[in-house]
Image (cartoon, rainbow, N blue to C red; front, side, top):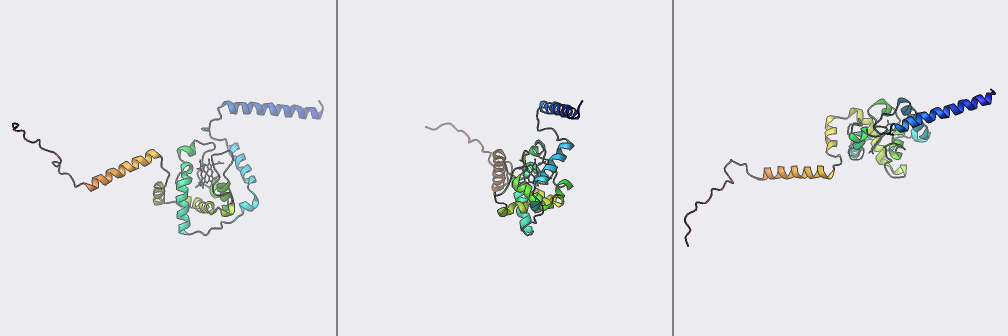
Length: 214
Ligand code: HEC
């Protein structure tokens, strides 16, 4: 066989093999429950890193870090991000763990080793073909909130139980959860407004019924 024929056979063989792999993958149901393979995670992260321009990667945080900035970012995260990422950044939520790919544990080196610029770029632009949405206004220069969130992501490994508890009160609530809270509050208000019962009040003795006098 001539060398170009050999090359053709190899290419056709590879295409057929890839077709079988893809068919197997699709027949598995394209379920979001699966864990991406190590190879897929590696390739996806390489492509993402390649797609972030060098100038964005090396950008420095233009917002000064103060306790108020960190507190605002913590509240923002509880409201907008915790549904997938959890208040502690572990990604252990019903939505976060049932996406494909899963929301990662952002306290770990894979996230913490990203540069500030990369974190900002990811928050501002989102990640295509994943559950990670784009946030903030379209103009990155006006998106201070995402830069503040970068500080909060850096703070995740040192988050205190008090901070996590406070975030719990800021997480978005469904209408039924709000209704339940209102009921609890009503019950508490009523039980503090009334004087303590001794056990006899409120029990009306039936009036003695004498003979009717007409
Ligand atoms: C609807 C679910 C969802 C919401 C809400 C969400 N994320 Fe994500 N996020 C994801 C998923 C899924 C990934 C993983 C994507 C991947 O593996 O490529 C991710 C990845 C990230 C990453 C990259 C971490 C890494 O190591 O690759 C950062 C940073 C991030 N999110 C920050 C945020 C912030 C900040 C918010 C809120 C403003 C937020 N996310 C809201 C689902 C979400």
